[in-house]
Length: 195
Image (cartoon, rainbow, N blue to C red; front, side):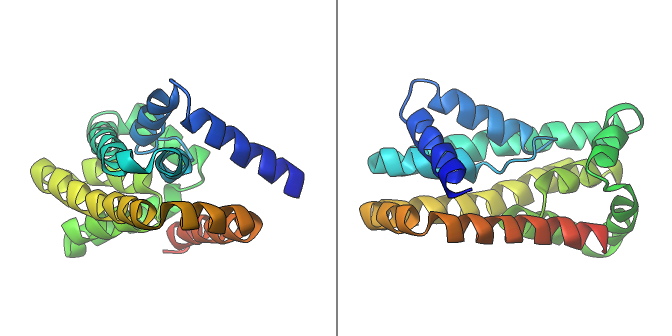
């Protein structure tokens, strides 16, 4: 398992230094807001570690395409829910949780979008639910942009400030960090399932 994990990590690091890195970042950032299961940080962090001086440029690209993808997810929820949105939710087994989650929008509105943009909570559920309940689109975009900006720029600042030390720390503790990452990811899924 350690060898496989190391190979994946090394491949992502390699990819982050190629001419395809920004294309992969754009793809994951955009489609991660609609249906793609991997978070943007999986490519953003290695890209920043490879070129720390571009940390804020990389996080800005991630932010832009994450928010654009959020707008597309909103569209799926508001216009294509019956044909596309429901299939995405069924694929991830989120339908029951989605129904409970959507009802919270009446009470919490943009705070749900804001919190979801900051946490490991699956952002795709928030984008589709926001469209489904017809949340004000401008407020949705602002809450998404602010929360994603806080998240991505904080990561960029940390890696810019502690770049080489952060890289050594990640290399040394890769297995533990991967486990923590997946625990947080599954915790987000768990919250949706039992909300």
